Image (tube, rainbow, N blue to C red):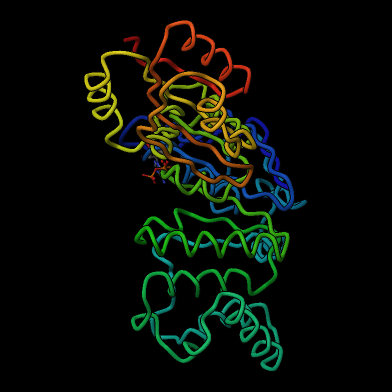
Amino acid sequence: MINLKNVTKIYNSKKSKSITAVDQVNLKINKGEIFGIIGYSGAGKSSLIRLLNGLEKPSSGTIDVGGYSIDYISGAKMRKARQEISMIFQHFNLLWSRTVQENIAFPLEIAGVSKKKRMKKVNDLIKLVGLEGKEKAYPAQLSGGQKQRVGIARALANDPKVLLCDEATSALDPETTDSILDLLVDINRRLNLTVVLITHEMHVIQKICHRVAVMEEGKVVEQGDVLTVFRNPQQSITKRFVKQVTEPGETKETVQKLLESYPTGKVLQLTFIGSDAQKPLITDLIRNFAIDVNILQGKISQTQGGSYGSLFIHIDGDANELNRALDFIKEQKVEAEVLANG
Ligand SMILES: Nc1ncnc2c1ncn2[C@@H]1O[C@H](COP(=O)(O)OP(=O)(O)OP(=O)(O)O)[C@@H](O)[C@H]1O
């Protein structure tokens, strides 16, 4: 559906030195996939997404989106491509003097769709995004989440093949963020729409993406399916992003306190991935070994590919029995890191 080959974008300026915002990027995004691109500010995400809808031309490389050579086309062909490659924005970009209905109808007017067809389509979209009753409201009368719903409905008006999301939830509170992310998953499934999103929040990637690419200084430094990247992040930047969701902020301090509180036995960090996360490991430990088991802290997160979680436990007892228990844990294919030996 989307194919980028050796794409580089250099901004040249007469006053300052040139900036390589996107550096030799290769990406393949499949039809019907939710693909996330994550990076800190300045990593080149916005430049990359603008290359995908033809707002910028690459300095070198080729970009194919839904059968269009976006780096190459212009004029009527580009206008047609833009109907099929739609976008939503962090600050919604709504027309403030138009009602919800009129905002959603706008791209249909531009495409020359008849009034009758427009009204039908707008009503369908209002239902799809859950804005019934708000048809005549103006953007200023809506909450942030409702404004983004209008943005999404408007983006879907011309039945696009690809939806690009530019930090679409960054201006929203956590609860509203989750409701918009749920809506994107729902739309992706119902319409088999390919969704590409850029974000600096790993929570967004974890919650809805099938695959992820990590960007740093213009380069894609790591990519893969979300669960694999969570399980085994390779680059230090990826490890930092993964920690945003897998480790609660206070973990380091808590672990230090735990180590002081449990001078004997072992404190373990268990990492559960996918179907392993559902296994009754703790029950098995208590039933099969003469050891004490204390659950200290834990967090299980859901991704589109399965669950991922971390559990801190303390086990204590006879040294032989503890080693047998550790061997048993390893046999279960649960990663176990011993944080301290008593
Ligand atoms: N139009 C432009 N002209 C010159 N330099 C630009 C332009 N757009 C972006 N840059 C530079 O390219 C680099 C990448 O910026 P970009 O906005 O793509 O990153 P980003 O990851 O989206 O960051 P942010 O989330 O802060 O927007 C930065 O150094 C930025 O200053």
